Each structure stands twice: as C-alpha cells, then as structure tokens.
Length: 510
Image (tube, rainbow, N blue to C red):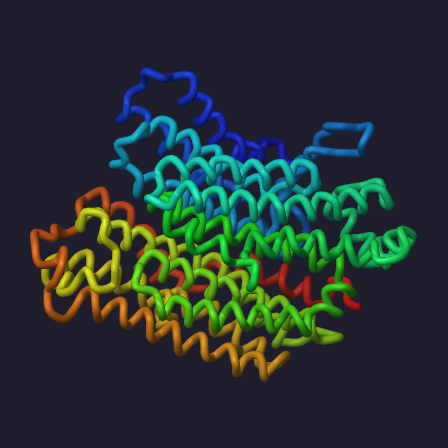
C-alpha cells in the first residue's frame, strides 16, 4: 500500500479540475483554458512521481490502493500500477495536455470543452489503473460520454452521425462484456482482476464457468472479446472509427487515436489473455488473420483516401492492428516461450506508446492544414507547403516518417520487434502483413509529396503562414519523444521488460 494515494490523485485530479470549471461559469475563455491545461498537466507531474517510485524488477502491482466499496458484492475500489499501466498512464498524461493545446483557439464554449476533456482524461487513466471490474467498467463507460459530446458539439458537418455511430458501437460492445462479467461473478463471487487471474492460472475459473453448462462458457469469452474488439477496433468491427476520427475536432482526434484506441488493446492484455487462455488459444487461428486484415486493409484503405484526416484514421487501424497481431501470434502457439514471444509482446507495448505519440502529431498537422485553408483537407487541395511553411513541413515530415517506421525514430523499434517476434511464431501471417508495410509507405510518402512538394495549389498558393508559437509548443514535445525513444527505446522497454518476461514464463497457457 502507498502512503500517498498517488494513483487516486492521478485519476481524480482531472475530474477535480472539471468540477472546478463547472462551478466557475464566469471564469472566462482564457482562464478556462489555462485551468483545464493546468489540471491536465498535473497528471504528467504525478506520472513522474510514479516513475520515480516504480521498481521495474517487481512484476506485481505497485503503489497499490485498496478500499472497500460495496462489501455485500465483494467490490473494492482497487488501483495498481505495473509496467503496462505505467507507459499508458504516461502516454495519457502527454496526449491530454497536447489535445488541449491543439484546441486552444476553439472559440465555442472553451470552458465546456475543457470540462469534457478533463473528464475524458480522468476516465482513461482510471481504465489503466483500476484492478476491480466494477470501477474499471465505470471508467470504461464514462469515457464514452465526454468523447461523444466532444465529437458532436465541436466536430465537422457529419459529427452528429459520427458521434451517434461511435456511441452505439461502443455501448453495444460493452453490453456484451458486462453480461460476460456478470456470469463470472455469478460463478466465482469476485470481480478482482488479480484474483481472477490466479483462478484462471490454476484452472479454477474455467471449471467454475463450465458449471453454467451448454454454450455459456464460450458465450462469456465471446462477450468479453466483443467489448474489447469494438474498442480497439479489430477488423471487421472498425467501421465506426474513420468517421468518428475524421469528424472530431483536432484535439479530440488526438486523444481518440492516441489513448482511447489503446484502451481496447490494454483490455486484451489485462483481461482477455490472462482470464481466458484456452478459449483465446482456440480462437487465435481465426483472430490472427483478422489482425492481419486490419494491418493490410487498414493500410490499403488509407491509400485510397483523398481526405487527409480519414487517411490518418485508417492508418490508425493499420498501426494498432500490429499490437493485436503480436498478441494473437503468441496465443496461437501451444508453448510461447523464448525470444520470439518476448520480442512480439515487448514490441506490442512499445507500439502502443509510439503510435499514440506519432498519430496524435499527425492529426494535429492535418488540423493545421485545415485551419489554414478554411476547412479544406483534401490531398489535392495543397502543394508546395514546404516552401510557404518550412518549420511546419519539418515537424510534419518527422511525424510522417515516424509513422512510416523510419530507423532512428520511435515508430521503427516497436514494429521491428513485432515483426521479428511474429515471424518466429506465425511466418505466413508475417509475410502477408508486410503488404501493409508497403502500402503504409506508399500513402504516407504520397501525403508528403503531394502536400509539401510539387506545384503550389489551393491553400498553399495564398498566404500559408508557418507555425505559431502555440502550435510549435504543441508539436515540440511529441517530436522530441519520437527522437528520444527512437534512439533510446530502452528508456521505455526498461519499464516493462521484466513484466513481459514474467508473462511469457508464467501466464496460464492452454
């Protein structure tokens, strides 16, 4: 137990900021923006405190907090931090303030936008830290509400439909997951994730679910799987994502792709894999090809887009699918030991963080193009931007090449580890997934060539101003991280390598 409730502060300080903004309607636009940013940045400061107290060699949960909540149902408010949680808390603490800075010039009700952003940030942090299903599920569902309103109220022309589709898909998936965990509680009497993992490891969870009889044990696994698959999203549950990301305001798009898509991958690693090793192993021959489809079709769909924001949205499906490819490849084999599984899982964790940074930067860059051109964001609407705005071209080019996986930038390391590991576990899937790498290179280089080079056209033909100090302040931390973790990835991998080694050696296997 931690003397200072660091994890509770990480989760609830953004909510305290949202409450403060709600109680101060006369604060004004500038004061509202500054208050929201200060409370958002507080999680970054507390994340630094957590890193300072964190021992990577300890693979259990650290800085743990445990409080009775609903004793009659054996429900606790339980928080804990391990290497997986830590990198995602750090990612959220970086993307949250960046999204607020990207929304700084939003004229329409900045106080209300700040409230929704802070509620969204606190909810995401709760998902990454909660260790009991009831508070975890509450954080999971609460994140949908501010995301829905950010899309609907500040989004583009198609925002109402996109927000509605986003909400229906994700709530529908969550309903299946809730029913699955209701069955788990009925048979085990607990919803504590560490306890359920222990029951799964010795076969008790599977035997208790078997008492339900018939198809019900499989239905429990399927319900939890669907709730997580929609959130990632795993192909073919992805159809809500392009319109939601494209219609959302730029700051919300940064948070959706940078953080919320990682919530689904986190659920696969934290819940589905340790609790259902045998069903996941049985389903992996099919699931791994769905992950390959996400890698390949996501890249080819991005290649066909003329809307730059939809291009980056489909690119997110492609990049997040790498993480699922690694997980399903490890689940596919009977005894996933050795360096291949370790490499695949370490790459997946690294990819979660690195994609969050590079994708958020790309969405911001598209937002810059959109704001300079009166709302246009077509691939053919620009040309020669490098000449008109060389600083912007430099930052955007680094973000593009990071997403492409250029050696020396952060995107390369995670993808290399994933493909190195998956090749040793499922070589045919790796070979097919390489098509996604080629398509990614094609559409990102097309983006770079058409927008920043060639004849000046459209918005670039006029007065296309370079980045302001505020825009530079938004991009500099993200670009700096691309270089830092491209050259020194061990700064991140050192936080979770012992945990990955423990997973490979001790997770319950079929």
